[in-house]
Length: 265
Image 1: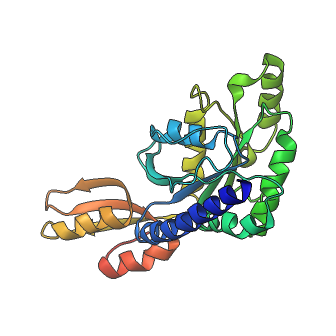
Image 2: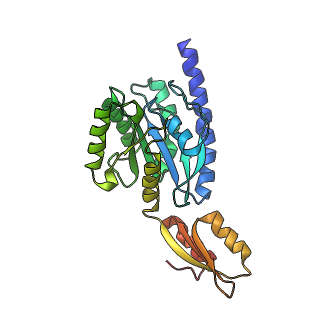
Image 3: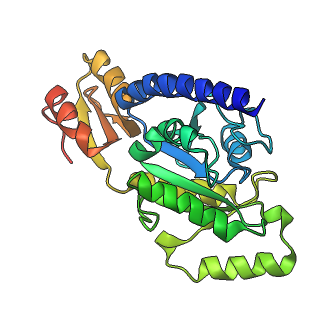
């Protein structure tokens, strides 16, 4: 029975790998940054995903509970949009035959602009679980101390005693702003607004803002900007010229400049 279940999981993971490959290609063509959720099994990733996206995704205390490709758009506090991606839970000591298939589902984490490491800080083995996740992240080529890209999310604050909660808050506040974990409860929504603001700050880093003048006769160009970047603002002068401030990744700047030679940083 165990062997049959392992075989079934392997087949499910292979399907996930193929489907996520197609989704990854679509995301590469989209202008929005990708935010990936990672974490130990039952850390609350799917519950947090539901909270952030208001979606209903399977949230169970089960190994591999999240095997369906899970991608949703999320709007950040100032209107920017990101793609949020859930992943299967990390577990230690995976059977050898499952390791490669399991890690294959995490390929998109490597390409993510921001990674949320979701931790169940109410769990007695929280530190050991975190170490397991960090080990796999390193094997994927992701440095857990890369605070420009990675945010620790201390989840399940609602299960903490007042003393434990206060201790974690003090520990968080003692860290530099760009290294500060987010203490949240995915179940109640506590701390989620602060987490979204932290994601927004990370997303903005390294992205470039261009001011693009669009003549009144170029309606297609205006639509093109919305499809290929994150439009921050737009205003139209008396002559009908629309000035659009757009934020894009460094790899898209040349593409915008080819389409709009008058664009400026």
